[in-house]
Image 1: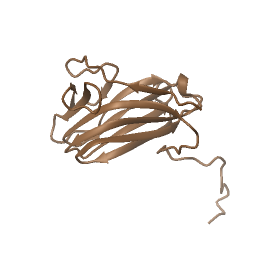
Image 2: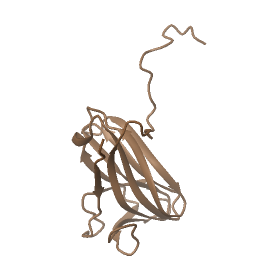
Image 3: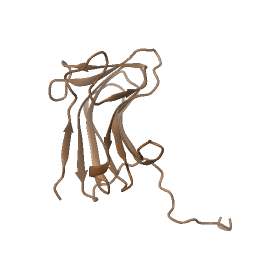
Length: 178
C-alpha cells in the first residue's frame, strides 16, 4: 500500500504571535516565527515562556478526519528545546466537539535538546470527525517546532496510543474472582 504523506509547512507570513493554520492553547508563552533557527525550509514556530512558572501550552492544528477514517496514521514533527521541563509532539483523534477522544498519544523530550524527531502512531476511528495534532510545552524556556508530516501507515506499525484500553466484555460481575 502506498503511503500518503502530507507535509504541513508553517507559513512564513505571520504577525503578532499568529501563525497561519495553527492555534495556541494557553497564554503563558509567546508564539512567533523564527527564520534563523529552522529544521528545514525558511521558518519554524517559536514558543518562549512569558512567566516564571508557565502552565502547559499547546500549539495545535485541527483537520477533518475524513481522509484517514479506518486507517493508521503516523504524525511526526521536529522539536528543538532550550531550558524547558518537557516538550512533546502529540495528537488526538476526536469527535467534532472534542467531547470524546478515540485515541491520544504524545512523544516527549526532556530538557534542552537539539532538533529531535518525535512521532505518534494512532488508529483513526471510523466515527472520528477530526484530528488535532501539534506540540505541547511545559516549564520555563523556549521551543522551536518544524516540519510536521502525516502519513498513512500499515497496520503492522504499532500504535503509540496512550488511552487505556477497556475490556471487550464485563468480567467478575458476581465478585467471586480473587
